[in-house]
Length: 219
Image 1 (cartoon, one colour):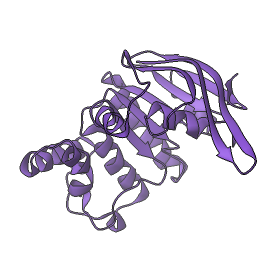
Image 2 (cartoon, one colour; image 1 turned 90 degrees about the vertical axis):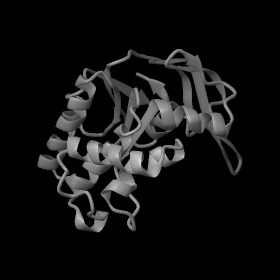
Image 3 (cartoon, rainbow, N blue to C red; image 1 turned 90 degrees about the horizontal axis):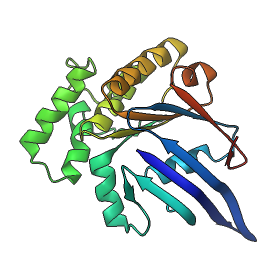
Image 4 (cartoon, rainbow, N blue to C red; image 1 turned 120 degrees about the horizontal axis):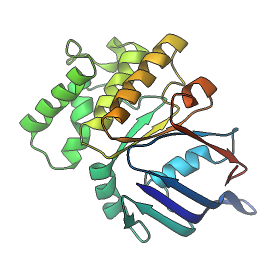
């Protein structure tokens, strides 16, 4: 599903460049669940952004679902994101002025799905998350765990093959964190590849494999 070879990524700074990812080699098979751990500044979020086609890399190779990602312009990258990837974030990234159905349906809008069909698919995704009674609730009317379930429903509504989760339990208490990881495990059990960035060992332990980044390299 994911193949990285000698991948490098740096960012410009005031007096040069900051080399964040250094010759990263990584394979993630379809259907795997992988945790990425590392200290602050180790490159975890940068790696996730590269995997999610949100950041371009400087050199090396990244093949996603068998296809080379080199040279993708923003439009092509957005098309790949909408058909292959789903994202879950620590801060939920829900639109405050939209209800749960509208938040979940948003990725389908960008895929050109008609309003009636995207709302129906959003309702099904929310019911799958146990939120059938929260369809018309806005984020301010939901608990942290419910917001993250809405975010997972949004990630799944486009039928992705890979879910990228950046500290998905970081804003939740321990009981709710276990609940959300249970939901992600169920998603993974259905054959969707799962990559979770986390600083919590107990969350990482629930994935089938843990990758540790140290100063931009896989330890």
